[in-house]
Image (cartoon, rainbow over all chains, first blue to last red; front, side):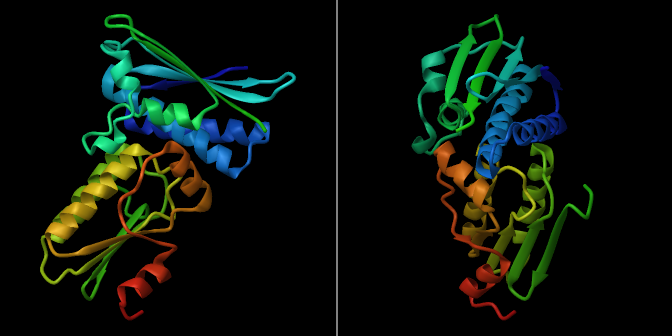
Length: 130
Length: 118
């Protein structure tokens, strides 16, 4: 069953991380994977707080031939104007660290993003148990 | 902010800031503010930030640490970040973000590196 965490303020980000860690542990992910998952949730949830104002993090455990943890970050915020720009890795450029999307993609195995101005943002990432 | 979550103390010319538990962005921001204020004091040569209690070191934490390190340097002080636990260190590497601040294994290691007397 999905766990849904409403995200609006900074403490909600911590709550989402904790839930993520706890689900990851229940699924059998090791310490590093749990840290990776918590970090990805942190980046995604922060974006909701900073750019959308409010949204939700949905945690889903995937059982089957492969076990995995899926995180959906959904918001009805302004949406991302330039998706290509947001996905470009600008961390080395020394400026602001932006939305951390390339980093989040690096952390997780699967990464999908849907966003458009006025249409909110939906990001789905998955980490599979090795 | 709950005093038990962060401890900041000055020992001689060294400021030691210790984070005991997970901090949200607001608390981390306030923590940075407090450190910046302490940098205004005289006679500070070293800053050690012990992250032992943090549950996650993400891009916001990295940004805060970089800023603190730069501000400290402008005030003639050297910063060491200590106590990034192995799972968090590995996650940070996977995130692909360089800390760009000197690090130490833990508080003891940091003080040793700084040549401060324990």
